[in-house]
Image (tube, rainbow over the protein chains, first blue to last red):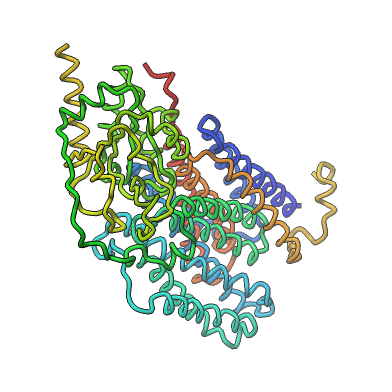
Length: 467
Length: 115
């Protein structure tokens, strides 16, 4: 009787989870999606609490209370820190899966080794490998994004890196296969697999740099979901399988979108280490860049009829969203059409720029995807690039030797005039020169994005007061 | 209750100690859920990819279900502690995941209502 009731709540929870994701298809219904998700999760939890044989209510209460105590403040992070928070929660998800798998194995080992069938053993192995590698991998990713001191930001590479990493994973898998056949006799292999998975997670992320973070975060998202699926197979629980599969497919789709947006393959992202790509061409004469004053830039924008702003990670670093909003207000007030061109991999996670600009109250119908905005670029009077680099580098279109060759870009160079805000002339993450900066129609505005945009706003508001 | 749910009551296996579901059934569930996921997610607006990820984050914390079972049942203390840590980690994801998703979604506005 109770078992049936539990299954009914699980069934309803699954349906609500599907609706939650369905409602995420547009901003108008998206919040309904969150409520559906909360409802689904509550049903799942209530259903599980009905499970017969639960006695440790004290432990459950304490763990849940502590979860709330940490979870609530974690949801207050500034939106520039959302990628870190996301990576951190992937780590928590992986940890939970790993621990449940570990607990279940030792429980069965001591209390009923006959339960360790080949099938369950395979599921446990999958669960702990995925769980623990997601745990350390995501912690590393979060550390890199938070710029924690002892975690190197730049990709770290060393000889035979991929071979040794895959070797580690291979050993873990071989140990796992051995355990499937001899779950009790070879039980000493279990901690070995845990350690290898933890180490593999760290080593997997070390060679990955900032620009690849959107893909890697999506991939870790997928792993966290798949480890929940494996847990479902271990515990014979369909709700875990369905919800985990929804999460797994979401992460998979996002990583595919990210890879396509960079014209790279999965293997290339995971094993290619962007940083180590050729360093040639460093010689060769530098074309001079032209500088523009904030006064001149403000004037050009004031007289434009269409201004396209291309935001990049630099905007997030400088926390310049509010200033950009003021610039948007100043220009719209003058009847200038202002649009924002969003590259899929701009920022450190999928959709990062959209959230930052929405936070600054910029209406979302002003945010235009790359494929749509590129049609408008030849009509664009001024294109303002704020903290974006590789996503506007024309070398991606024609320079076959460039590491970013083939990557779809926003055609900032096709605008009638391009203004680029940049701190210094240091090359971008990929370590390649950006032809855009030396193009005939490009003018540089050097300085911190927040300060420069603030100057532009000041020029514009000062000008309007005079007339 | 039995009257309302005749089909489910007729399902095999005693309710208190459910027999292991067949592997093929679980694989079917997994496959179909994945296809539904792929179908639904491809339709999500690119605008909302960050909230989508924090929402799926919260959803993948469904591991809470497994954690509760491990923590709550009468097991040796070490198992209970492992379960409690897993339960804590999942709860953090659920609470922060849903809250931050909603916080982000509240920020998405069209141009009209302002001014």
